[in-house]
Image (cartoon, rainbow, N blue to C red; front, top):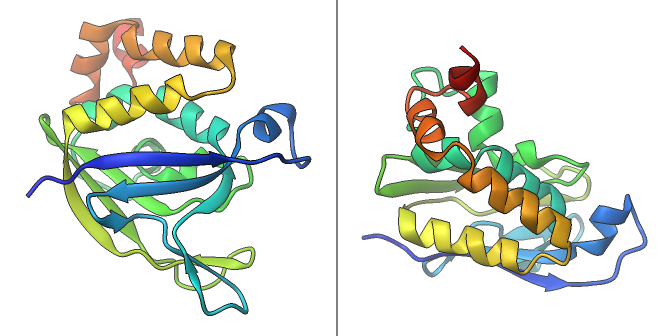
Length: 187
């Protein structure tokens, strides 16, 4: 059964990191139906938290840079290949944050969203979620739009919207075989 998909942010003030990270510091919760994709435990504590402190900025950049591949590219013949993993696995959002071990894979009308527990503690936290759900593509797109609309950075909002609408036919075609949209246009 398909699950709802949402990314929830609870903004907080931060004085750590570059200006764009400070401006978009948030407690991030990723929901897939009634499951949380980012249950986290801090080292030395027994309680489980359903949100992780990160910056929404690198996550938004990752979504925008990989929009077409996330939305239309299926599982790779080699899911361990670097290019495929950088486009489909959330830790690629980077910026020094410890992201959930989430993965997004499309089959056209549905997206597979999974999260796996981390083996141990990394920078004082470990992820506990172990989920694998199917999400309607429309729910994924709506969540993306809401996340961008909630952005506190208007310039970022414009670049994310542009990435999503630019070269739509080419990008959709390129994502299916697993190529970056520009590589098809430039070829």
